[in-house]
Image 1 (cartoon, rainbow, N blue to C red):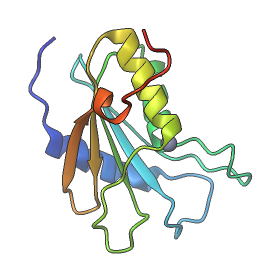
Image 2 (image 1 turned 90 degrees about the horizontal axis):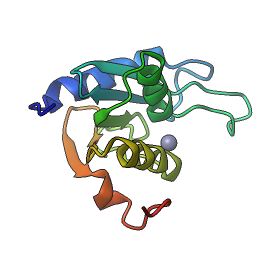
Image 3 (image 1 turned 180 degrees about the horizontal axis):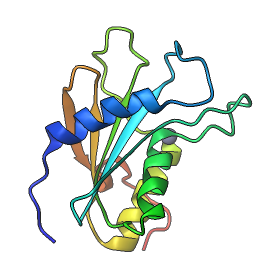
Length: 141
Ligand SMILES: [Zn+2]
């Protein structure tokens, strides 16, 4: 399904998802939001789900991808990441290596060139194809 992507709405949804942060210090700079758009036109959002161990924390992008999958809606067209790392809200949030891998695998399975939307808290964003930000993926087929 070919569709026009409304990036502004998607970024707003990811920013709104910051409020669903769970499990940690609500004043932390390490709060992230994500919004996934699927080829059915649905949007699934999530924030990170923090663990006291830190290493068990689910990243917002992971949680948003899982949220979509829980609705059997896995053909991702675009995914936003935004976060509170920068106190000024200016810096664009990039997905971490683990999340890039998960997004790449989703794209590889669906054949859809997933758009990765790196946003800041003010709604500014940069869009890159997952293949641009994962140039030498695994698996390589
Ligand atoms: Zn991540």
